[in-house]
Length: 110
Image (cartoon, rainbow, N blue to C red; front, top):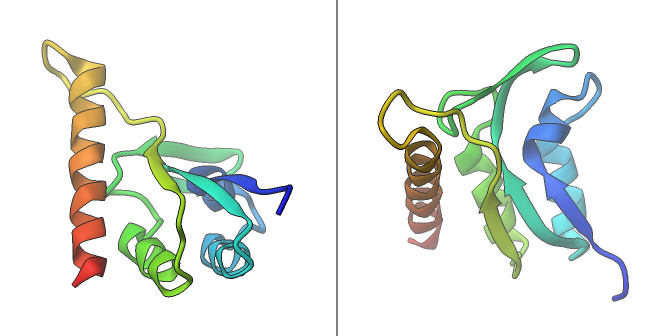
């Protein structure tokens, strides 16, 4: 297979006509996703905003279940994460996203 997607969940979710669950189902079933950028958003273009991974319109656990069903072999990488109000704002936001994604992974492995 010579062509695969870098699939950004947040980008698909914020598209006016985007159906992120359908896209993940379709392309993961075809084994056409190389890796996933996982982020969450609220709203659609042009009125959207990035949220913490657990707060947006995307049901992240549902995405993980679709990927599990289709035996997705690739990587899931946290994308942008809102910064937290602390001494290490970017690192803390990213650490929260990593922890949440790790919990989702464990939930679908059961």
